[in-house]
Length: 246
Ligand SMILES: C[S@@+](CC[C@H](N)C(=O)[O-])C[C@H]1O[C@@H](n2cnc3c(N)ncnc32)[C@H](O)[C@@H]1O
Image (spheres, protein in one colour):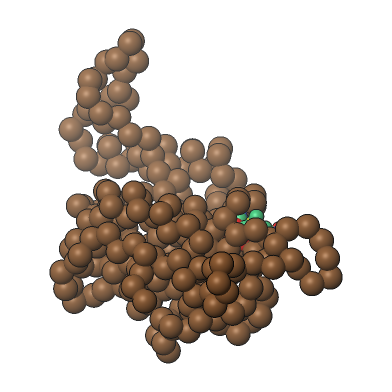
């Protein structure tokens, strides 16, 4: 059975990440995978992404994949059979299977770096009340949440994980120095950016950035990053101090 979405035919690259996504709504991924960084990553061969429709693995005549929860309660649950068939079709010893779930470990930049080092990621997007727990216990390596709120389905979380991981792959970003300086790279939020014109509606660019003095620019950016982190994310700031990074 072919995947529902494979947007960009790609060339071969020496280091390639394979990603299979299982969803009830493959169409959601079409635009996302065909523009910008995700499109480029596939075109240069850094990643190969297949999007599969979970319904294609249903054996029911109406392609039904959900059923009410045992024990009663609201909503429906995605049944184990289609998900077992789907995941087992792509899973190998080098696969890392992720279920997107608000009950999972909170996603962050460190996790994105870890996942970028894998060979094969399988992302399972739940819907309704989620997926049958037997899928999680038998086939899933890790559950990931993108934050403490509940979305309708796992598609937006899967796109967040995809984006954060794929931009870390070699050859994807135009200038990989961006990765060294951006937010979270040293446990700090990034400094503010300014571009032309120098004055706009009475608002000026900070003089240090116009000085042409690299040391002064670096010092100003560092100070701004630290101030912003302390103000906006005291949790990150405290962790940084605890880890001795000051
Ligand atoms: C309505 S939610 C299910 C919520 C679940 N009954 C609960 O209370 O934890 C349906 C699907 O959306 C996805 N989802 C929702 N919020 C998420 C989040 N914060 N992080 C990751 N996935 C999420 C998951 O795939 C989940 O199976």
